[in-house]
Length: 556
Figure 1 (cartoon, helix red, strand yellow):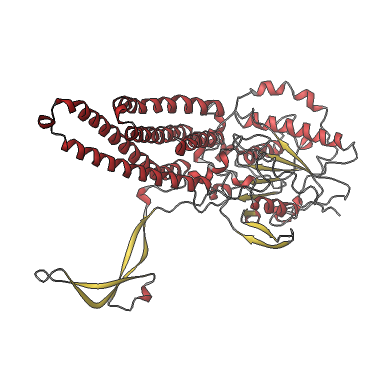
Figure 2 (spheres, one colour):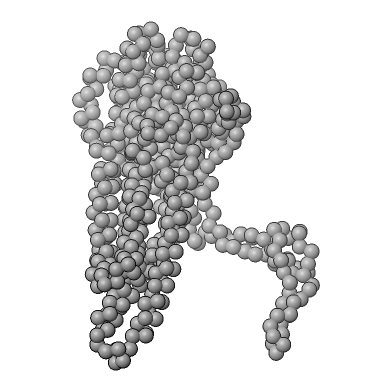
């Protein structure tokens, strides 16, 4: 199975990781977290907080700072991520700007927003104390701010709400850990995929079962050609192959997802579905004193296989093993899937030819003439025939599934629209000329008008232009996981501070900057470590497209 074995592992790992990005880790009760609070309280330094809250309107948020100060910039991961999620890029610009990047981790505290917020608060407080200690007390952390990816942005919003309402002794204005928020791909308006774990699990199960079944049965059919005397045994194996793959799908994949997600239907994901009460009521809050901005991704072709490209690494959304700003080619798996589909079609055709050849041989075997001596050979041919027919059926099923899986994924994510909302789109016009062409024989002549395709009706110089309609199911703009409209629905964030990740820098062979190009096509996971990520961080640090509060001082 050499030509397919890597794919089987790819399918399993891809689907598991896709679920891991949208699932939870081992929960730790909030009460247990409170036991560690006292140990961190002594590190809280309120000298640079409290009275320094920005009071200007959102469009005039500014920040004045001393050249001797550093800025703490917290990087917060999303659902299923860890402190490694921002690892590739958090310190990419420390040689250019005055800031201290710290990666916040709440990987094991994602039961609900209360637990996540407390865990993030405690980790921020610890990291801040460590940063001050590492600087030997010579630097002050002047107005830190936080950058959150996906769910991490919602956790930051939850904390901002609690600070502003003096939620408890920890979440008060005098204990603020950050004073500004920037989100990347955050589902501010909710995410349908958040509670689609059962559907995603079923998709994973079907994927491995159907594709695995086709691979196994196809290989067995090929073996009957090489070793026809084993046809009976191979037929038995082929019959049980589907049960074997079903077992792999139901046991390995299901248990694997549970291992990675540790609780598929966790309360936290339910707290930010588009219809959730927590998101639409409790979290519907904006503190006008908190500077805010956001970056959103737009994937022009939101394929499941493209979003999966960077979900099959060491861990979902952890880019420690990838080159800095190197997540730029998300076509790899998509192209591989196309090749696999093509291979399956070729295999199905070859097996169909074998069926035809075996059938011819069976038809030539006349038992009364050749005698009973050839009866075992005929039976063997029938066994061969059955194995090939089973392979063809499995391969055709796999081809059909590959063609359907992406619309299924789009429906789960909420990207596609329902068939009832399909629209008819004009794709061109048939331009009918006055000329006629006679087709058919002398006994049945038929005049057919000459027509040719034109893109626009105005280009037709014939008698009539007939529109050509095609049913279209337009996709909602998204980053292949979260709708664009949801990413941009940050309460209180002015429109001018909502940025698409569509800029990246071009350098010559000597490393000199040539130009800044515009190109979107950034998906939900890719935005953590692609070329556009580099420019997005520069835009933040230079105050371009974000409030001046986030602007960092440049190093000499």
